[in-house]
Image 1 (cartoon, rainbow, N blue to C red):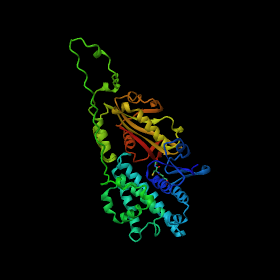
Image 2: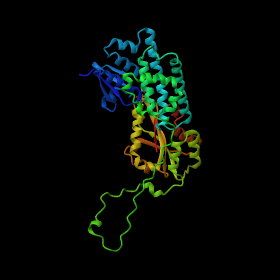
Image 3: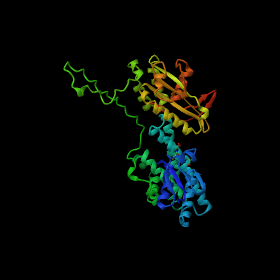
Length: 411
Ligand SMILES: N[C@@H](CCC(=O)N[C@@H](CS)C(=O)NCC(=O)O)C(=O)O
């Protein structure tokens, strides 16, 4: 029987724990997070997570790493990685914590903007990128005079920092960034040769150029196959008279409203390409035609049943997937506000026409939400819509200001 299970999902903080297990051949299973045990046992759903013998549970990457290093039976290895003296051990914790809570947190936020996972916000992206460079500057100040971050040898802090800085080079940083940080890269190359890092950082996947924010490509409208021309007088052969194998898809009821002058596609492109608050939203209000599209406040009806914020966000994701048949007539966003065990779902969605049902009723769970028409000529409604689409300010619910913690865009 194995001595435990580590849960990972390919994201940065799971890389080193997994590599320690695999490189040292520890008797510990590595599983992906999309399983029932993980969902049940780890309500925060963060990786890495670990279950050991006798129900011993761990979360938090620093604790997981500390535990795994202690599974190595070689006392010398432990001493080198964790530090030999109190001072060394404290320095190891210091640099582990620095790369975990300062650098990795800012990296996750920056990558979210650069990879288009959250609404683009130029100012926030610039802030995060500058913060990452500030952190690197702090590490480089140390590495100018010393070979390693915490001690005179490769410690656990070097391994962890190299694992996430390596991961970042497969996602956002390219050669231009490496050239700007020669001190960091002298260190990185030394640590990357360590078997534990060589096993988990694949330098062949490093980006050539740093990722810039690139607007998603215009989606080509699917060409409807041309309708067959009516046959001339000659009697059709029996075969031709057979009904087509795939029945023609029924038309969406909103198609009857015809083509709008306000181009939803142009708007979706603007929203994806431009900084939301300063550029995209002013463009929207300049072009929006209230006769063609109505905008609805959408409230989840059962907020008191929501538990974990990530589960609320999954609920929204599922709802949006089920709306896919109507999405070409819709745009909007639903956000999750609050915290675990005290959160809610709210948002603003624009639909073709003046009714909400024809757009929403394609999703079997549409009645779990309440719909209230908004009037953008009212400053208060307009600002609500702006906030729901920009996610840059807390949302006011029943007079209380609540932080937006997650959300999804329907486009
Ligand atoms: N405080 C935790 C943070 C763990 C964390 O945020 N892990 C990321 C992956 S690197 C994650 O699980 N992200 C998914 C999410 O936040 O839902 C730790 O130090 O381990």
